[in-house]
Length: 222
Image 1: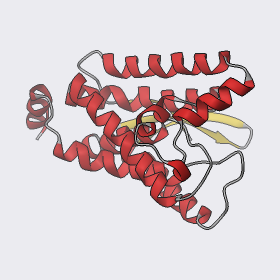
Image 2: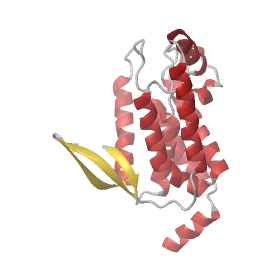
Image 3: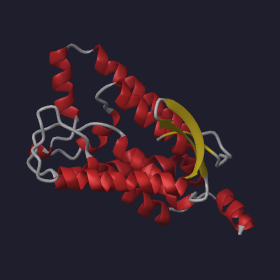
Image 4: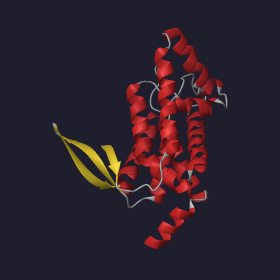
């Protein structure tokens, strides 16, 4: 299932979300400009490597990606869900929220892969936090989703709560299935980083103060 757009209107311009997307794209363009040796050094310097963990990489790793599909997938999900979360938090709180989710995701990965020498990169943990926040604040929203049926593609409108919980369960079960398996030299999907980021997003959005205009809209609906 590929989400295309959501039904939840945003009442402000998602400046920070757009800025994060631009930052990720620019860093990736720098990556693809490097030769193989320089790229390997760049990744190993700024990626999370549990075997030689450095706190700064919890931040730098979330702006690196392993390929165009990795980048596009993360930025697409960020754009769909991020504008609404930014709308209710405001730009500065949203940026802090995003970074904290990324840090929580990175720590979850380190704790579940202690001693691993495999570099881990990607914004998916932080984006998972945005998705967790969206689930808490907009469970009744609907997502227009692209679904393959045999050799055909069709779109259906599904409840956000269904899509997000389904995605979260996939991360948990995939992570559990991967426990005990040795990571290959190429690495793999950081399932528990996704889980950690998602849970962090649900907790943080419940603790952080939302914009006054959002609270007024919410009260009017109730």
